[in-house]
Amino acid sequence: MPIPARFSRCALFCIAALLAARTEFAQAQANETVTERSPTPSQTFRTDRPQPPQGIEPSDGVGVFDRMGAKLPDLPPEKPYTGAIDEAFGAYQRGYYLTAMDKALPRAQLGDPAAQTLIAEILSQGLGVKRDMKNAAFWYGKAAEGGDPTAMFKYALLLMEGNNVTRDKAKADEYMRKAADGGNSSAEFNWGQTLVADNPGDKGLKLALPYYEKAAEQGIADAQYAVAQIYQQVPDLPEDKKQLAREWMARAARAGFDTAQLDMGIWLINGVGGPKDYVRGFEWMKLAANRGNVAAQNKLAHLYVNAIGTAPDPVEAAKWYVLSRRAGLSDPSLEDFYLGIEDDQQKAAIEAANKFRRIN
Image (cartoon, rainbow, N blue to C red; front, side, top):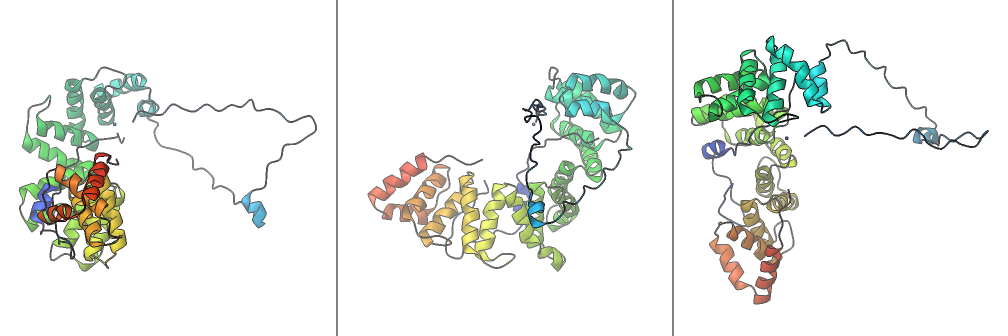
């Protein structure tokens, strides 16, 4: 029984440290720093709509298929559901958390891992009950022993951090690996991170790659980013994988991962993993900058200065430089540019920087 799981996004520093340094802009160089949903209430629909006068039939309207002279195809017959009905999880999905707890508890006490995980989720999030991480940890542990992948992932995190359980890295690693092998996407990514950290160099990246690939296929943006970097940077990988590097970077970027948006901009401008496209590269860089990525703000300033993918704009260039400088990223060449523009342009850039609000 799947339970929604949250996990902390790892910054992928271990990958970045092992991969080769990113290619600098051809026209502009800069220092780089890669610096829970309750169910919605069900809607009620009015059924007391006014009735037409006696003897007059309401029009059903004319649909697109009628205008085309084609009959609307029949819907395929609904397949009958023959599986077991989980009343506890059904109540959980509808937001009836106390009902879910009442229905799950007897099963959990009899050793049902799915019911144990459900109770742990309710307790850990304080859904309809007081938040109780100590008892949540107990039920996560029982469910993990029973082989529930979500519970094994959550319990591994608790074991790593030593929260309400005794810290035990070896046991945490064992449960994380089992959860990953059980198909939990968050565990797949985190186990990949562990393999990279414990095995320096290309060896760790190659060991982690199958787990990153599985997590990437399930939509984990960090894993998509990792796959793209490994496909592009690690030697001795099949050529068909290398050709997919830019596609995976784009998927991570489209998912809203600002570091992937930054790198997508760099790859397009420098022609990494495919042809150059200055305009699209500028667009990705601007999106990452607006999301608060400091390195992207710095590089965006260079793009405006050098008119790469956009028209030259000294005020916009200075604004993005001011924002990145305030965040602690120094750049002597941009400082020289800033000091060389007119006083009114500097003032306009500072005013624009003061009004900046990052886009989430």
